[in-house]
Length: 380
Ligand SMILES: *Cc1c(COP(=O)(O)O)cnc(C)c1O
Ligand code: SF4
Image (cartoon, rainbow, N blue to C red; front, side, top):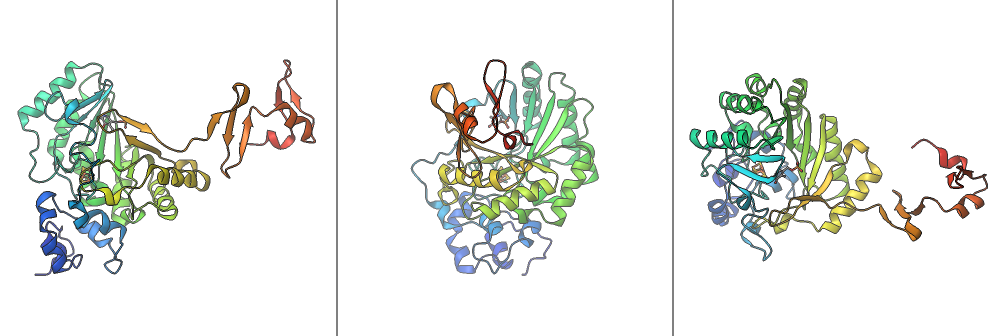
């Protein structure tokens, strides 16, 4: 039976009837679907070009046999959430902030998900008692400045349950910031209703939303309207993207993504190096490739378009920036700085440069060069 365009695709059969998979491929993919959930919302299904075998949206959500290939370096719990979980639903790795995971379902299931062993319709949400225990833990830990709601996807909660949770967190005096990580605005924008936005209102805590988005085409009309409703309600939006082979690992796609985010009033926050989740090697780039892309982005796009390129160190050692370096040690305690064209400059400039530049050097009282030439004094 053909699927209505409004229906979500929740199985391989749905992907076949939606024209996104042929019947033979679906038969072969049985073991993948048995291992990891399959769901693609109508909104994102509509963004796929079925004629493009390498479509960057399809690649993120339509299962592939490559998911059954485990690479030796891959880990079921790549960033060791479990090792830092003092009780169910909480990951407390850094003293000042923790993750609270009230639900384990998502509007879509990304094939590269770093928590793919933990999310899905089969996984259980926190019970009322478990959520109460998690809130008690936060109340008892006064060092917790920020609570990050993730999962799964916290915007899969009903507005009523979400309102209860946000109000409980907002009432904890030491919780200054509530951050939600979500794919709902791009994957299921219709969920961003007036009731949901009302549920996010806080009296005291600052509430931020980090929107997970990996390709400019995910920000269609409906997604941009949902983001506008959120930012219109005074909620700052941050962008979280994963660097993915065949999705955004080329200069044009990555630049277009960052510009589309900024245009939707979403400030790019993190570009994640792909985590070592099982069966995701076909999505990972090398870090060297990622650094080259970041260098291109820095040289060709607005400063607003620059995310931090980060690696979550396997084993639970936290996220660190792994972007290209522009600064290296130079002679005599100075530095060598690389400009956007790849040319290297001594910093501070050597006095000899000043003498040969054709313009009188400007020195301070101690004889240090303040300015070597009129060009050197330009606006930065
Ligand atoms: C990613 C993460 C955070 C948030 O890190 P930020 O750098 O503040 O965005 C907090 N706790 C854990 C366990 C995380 O994995
Ligand atoms: S939305 Fe996030 S948690 Fe859910 S499947 Fe995608 S990457 Fe995983």
